[in-house]
Image (cartoon, rainbow, N blue to C red; front, top):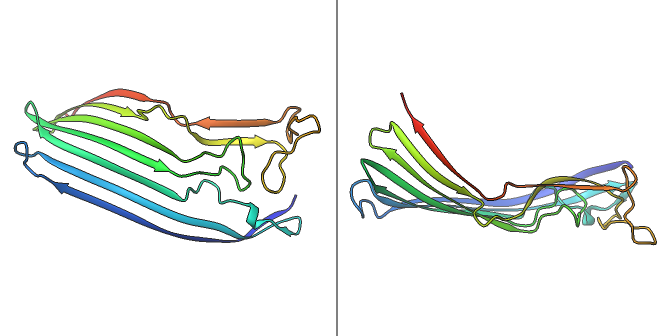
Length: 193
């Protein structure tokens, strides 16, 4: 099959913000912080030729969610001859297509992740100790994959009269998904010499 993604259009906007406030509200060096990002991208094929037929209306830009956002709230306090930094981050990605043709097995619906951390730094910046949590809600989400199944022009899976999928590799067909890390909780420690 000869294909040619001949023309595409991308329009988008990004916004970032950082704020520090409530300085010294709980002693010297304490403060609250906020950072946030919002990204929007509208990517569309204008011309996508497959066997001399334009199928651009049926194709999607791969690995390009329309919306990405994140917000981090942090606090810093003086604790035990040092500073304790606490932060939590909520991030979001809207639906993501793994390939140009939609895949019911691999396309990832929109999802959110929650991370948090506590990091203590000594006043002389020689010692650090941290407790970190990633994907605290233990969200299951697809990051990539492969699909070797026959599909129609709209991305739907072609099936035999008996309902079995039609493979394009091997005898049974393959759809393999790779997932992001599950919930992780870990400790870090550092010493500067």
